Image (cartoon, rainbow, N blue to C red):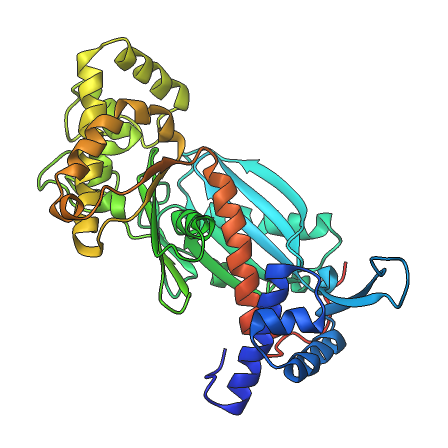
Length: 406
């Protein structure tokens, strides 16, 4: 969106506020939109008239509550105005979803994949093919998809369009924007999935919450951090926490460096430690969940070597978070991911290390909670963030001026 200090920028900003208000409160009158957006009623009337003419809004009549009088005319988002696509890349599958402009799920399917498939070019070709399939199933052409958002693990860069490094493809990068051009003209964004988890938990915590972190446990170790400033603006990030150095010359990590947090606390690191395997040996990049379940069962039955492996994983995770909180201060932490199933074997050790942190001791122990459905968080936040970005970057600035209809 343009600079709001200019006349044109201010108009774009106000149009975005109207759209944001409608997303918050649903079908509303001019008066209700003005109250929520803090815009003058006349300004709201002009903007809603423009958005209605452009096809972004619809008018709907609501019968009077007492059965008499004229019906109320409410404004609502036009679900046919745009379609947005979402791709969630997971170690064992890729999930494709399609929503309308009113954030209603229209279609979803999953494509199984194997962790041993490490050809980035072949994977890119498959994504293109599956994205065409997603459009065709709803009778859409590629240009009818206004925005494509991709959530994945790994390191994202290139202005938010490239997967720079991942556990599966290693250093083989995928530029998704270049991959999908010229057939797909809509905006393409790539984000680490854990930043969406953190964004969702901060939203759930309410408008007075300032920070929230989500620690995702599994083959990979992910960390998402969401923050809200004094103006209520939210930012989120997913630093490569799992590949933060814990111990120089420590055990080998999947990224090729020794001593990363993930090398101790990822599934393969726990398995390696449990069986006292060589530190320079990676048992497998991806450990089947049932194998981890068996390992945890033996730990709960008293196997000391395996219990040590889980406690060591907790130590390393807590030390990494402790460094984070030394800089940013205590913040609530949600534990998520498939490794949540084994957090009972780590929780005591995890909290004990956090309690040793000076800033926590003089302030407060952060709230530790669990989230059993991380995928729900990722999708809900991804759709909300993507719709807001589409509103602000395209609709408010009049880069979209006609309905995209099936």
